[in-house]
Length: 305
Image (cartoon, rainbow, N blue to C red):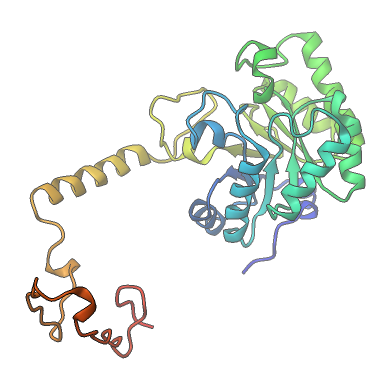
């Protein structure tokens, strides 16, 4: 196994100019595949509220749900650094509550760091988390937890005033102690200015090529939702079509009694079924010993041991 990616690894990648590859995952199976593929960072995003749970925003996601999904991902990710999103209202009330909740994501969820949305208004919270030895990834620009405040999922920083505010947010968050910063839904020129101004890595999503790295939701890059077509997403596969086609073939073979065939069924030369006597009560029937396992076979459907 290659060396585990840490926050220090990411800073070194930023320094040598090697782009950081970050992707979301929400379960152990996807985490293992993406880890084997070479992900530097796996984000257990509160985007699970939309892509896993079917909500129209990230707001309904709870801390308990985030801990559950973080545990699943961290069990499977051997190399990638795993980041856990702090869900809506898990850090906004007070810095003290943020520390408690982030501590649970680390202790119970097993993540290496946490991510929270927001700018200068959360610098005190970031500083207290860092003092509690909890690494923090920041997130500014289009922040999904503020969808109602922003009036929708809109690109941020297109005018001089908001661009200056985002730059100030980025500088303040770096000073507060974030080790990296997600820039979502901002013009590529602004993302370049922020990246050039900071010493920490920037991770872009809808922020252009000049960021230190890029992140996409795994279901988006794999093409699992044909109805979701934002400008910043590139589909590297059509898993929706592939999965649907495989399922349709399975259903067709089941209905035609073509599956399971002999190659996918079990046989035995030792079992002889005898019709039971309905007049004999269950308590009076002779107990038969269970069949002994066949030598050389494991407990899971005859898989060799």
